[in-house]
Length: 310
Ligand SMILES: Cc1cc2nc3c(=O)[nH]c(=O)nc-3n(C[C@H](O)[C@H](O)[C@H](O)COP(=O)(O)O)c2cc1C
Image (cartoon, rainbow, N blue to C red; front, side):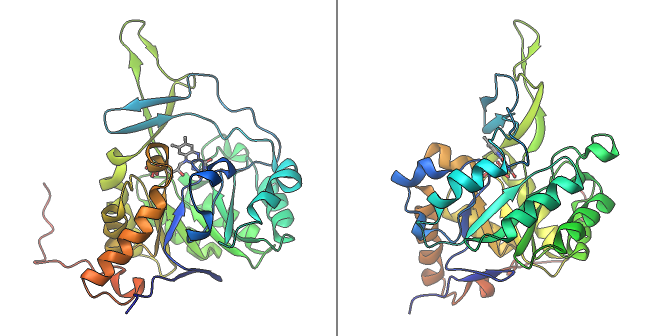
């Protein structure tokens, strides 16, 4: 029998648990990837006003991943709604829109605009941007700011709200709890890990922005640990992100407690990788007699209660 791969994120029903990670997926991929096969579509974050992004260099390859400081370059939400949204409306998979802002007001205005669009199933809050109201620390680095921003936008929509969490914090479970208490339907984690690289000949930082975000296989164990911790702390669904390169990686996140997964850097290597991951998860379920994603989720087994430091 075909296993049941569907998952629910708020009121979004996804036919399988695989969706893109914001910033690594766009309409230009439609010739290389079958969007109708995805659990959901999730384009790159948009901001209220157009944003130019960071100075070059913006992307470098590292030993085991990618370091980027793109800086959410985009044409702003009004341009997106007028010119880009309709392109995604040609596909049947649910559409989740990622938004980022520098103030609570900007987030609220964007949520109000998206709420009116029937083709938008959910909104992911990229709260890794600096919160200008509190002097530049990102919303997602502080539990109170996280609670406040989620609560503020929750009032304006009944569409699924996903809070995307940054790993650049001491205890991510506190942030996840705050997002849940604020009314989020799910959390996604992790965004990129703040990192840098230096050119030893010039002794200058390689990235124009000095620091950037590390993604890819290097961050997977960190992401799995954080997903596991968060899934054991909150009751809303957790979406696992970070270094998922193949179906086995996706399955690992689900066993750790994720209800769904996002795939980012891997798409740069193999544009149709999400199709392979969807098939691979299903094949695993058949091989291991797993009837549903829900049965697999959080099914990690511990041999002992060993919790020692190493
Ligand atoms: C080039 C690039 C651009 C990104 N842009 C965004 C973005 O606009 N919004 C966002 O929430 N995350 C963004 N991210 C982070 C990814 O969504 C994801 O959280 C992170 O890369 C970890 O997943 P991965 O290892 O599968 O890439 C970006 C990542 C990369 C590599």
